[in-house]
Length: 543
Image (cartoon, rainbow, N blue to C red; front, side):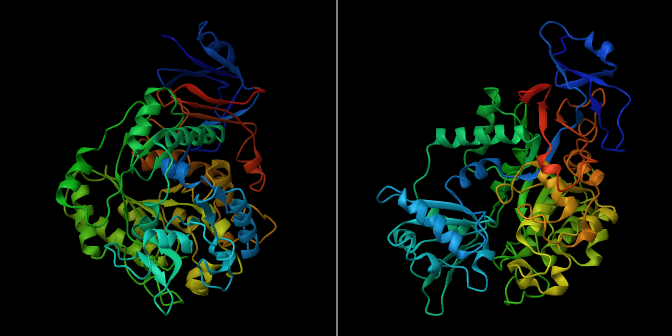
């Protein structure tokens, strides 16, 4: 049998134990690890066509997997002005002014990554930018991707001159006391009013942007991702790239199930399970129980300090519960966006009812995504129900502050802000904790995600105090959150997340041991090689 990949002079790290295996070499064939051993034994397995790499003592881990990512929409949304580094309104205005200067007459301006903390105590709206965007149609996506600012000209072109009513309970055209739009649009239904009239890139441009983004992810050490949407051309793009040999990540894709999904659409979502190709597959569905705390659309057990975040994303949460039961009985795992404590509790209640109603049993592992604030009595239920806790620690690092002066914390107040992203409490309660970035909400490099789970400081200023240091994960836990736990979340613990014969040859090679490199230095640790299905998707020129 041909052995197309051989890695020699390696340190093979077992994420289950944190120890190095006694072997120093690895061979892969047919997408699986076929042999471990010493260099001479494994080298003998290589024929003339094999890729043989001397790793010179580098560390090999099972491939790092992002537990929550949006490749297609991210590649599209991150095109335009990057506002993520703007910390105040003056910086936003300066960036927008530079963009306007380079803009062709009549062209649209787009921006992304805008942090509401830049507004300080001012309401989020376009008023601070009216002079800069005078006559310019512009859309500025807030970092949470659940809200955007539309300039006065964009609102005019979209015919938006007052409030609207939507099927999504949290969607809103935010207006002032006189009924005039402020420019802030909450949730997809409101944002689409402007998006549908804005210019769009061609299909080929969108596919090529996706391919480029995936290549950058592979270079950062990612071998896979749990893609939490399948909107528009997503599945077709994955199929085309996969067929052309241009898909460098293994993707598990969960299409959306939104309020208003009828019986025919439910049957179609169930029937579509398992569709895919060599490196991608449709597995599960993505649902939403609330919006975000930052824009007041989360679902909290008690209103935030602005009197907002009081209701679910589904107009009738019991309809959500019934649909979860249908998916469970059909053997389809669900992944539900639930940020607020009431939303998380309702999802867990829905899963408990689904499990009690019968079905295929424990092989259907449901998930809760985000889990930004929960009380003590919620923690233990994740393990009891075998519900995966999918958390994005860099959201806490980059968008909140230890002194609770950020928008997220001010809205919640001290008691709930102190329960921010309870990664360690979830872990210690027995939950399977999976780490991810939610890109494009936060950067995708997995070493940065693992570092944030450990230090809980903003990546752009590591001198700041950590937010909730007691919730930090250990180095080993952070690694497990992107390897063995990611495999378990996908029901693939029997073939992924370990370095062992028969397991997938999805591998990440690092210049040093990620368990001993300090958390603040981990994002800068060089990624020397990435392999997916036994094929090299990234290789450092010096290797």
